[in-house]
Image (cartoon, rainbow, N blue to C red):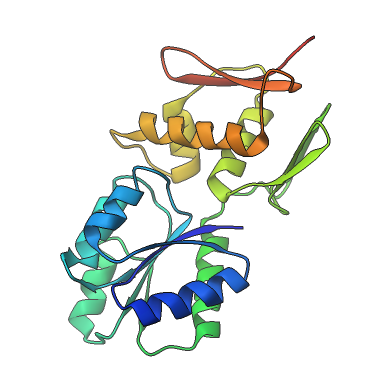
Length: 228
């Protein structure tokens, strides 16, 4: 299920949203300021962000611009403002949707689902790859390696699908980033490195696994079968 970054300085709203979204199966990472949210971007890239506009150390719209240097993941603004100018500023800063407080949690859920559906790049003709001892299913979000099933975050699943589709071939971090995020930025090499590291951890790839994800000094990655 998707990883959501929730940036909200109202502790009550944060708790309500987090509890609800986690009950719906999402993994929610919370921050109460621009600074703490920016630190989180060094640790992970969210599949979707929910941003309050007014934060104690800045503006959620400014943070959205920072986020856009890392990812094209959907951004939904949650704010008490409902002026047209604020709505326009939200979209111009890189936002994808805008919900005015108070709002119904089921409406929030529907908006999140709509944005994630729009953002996920799935192949209609080939949604599933089946290799010996490895299966990658984009529709279910599940990967199976050596009989061990793993539910992967969206970005990691897409990276694994891309590598599995080009088994044995080197793929540059530029190509991976552009395919997954829809653009290329200066920090794309580090972002993909972190994504690959987490993918290997979630899949529990080790010396006894049937497959390995190898890297080159040029920032290329290759998924290849290990022959014992």
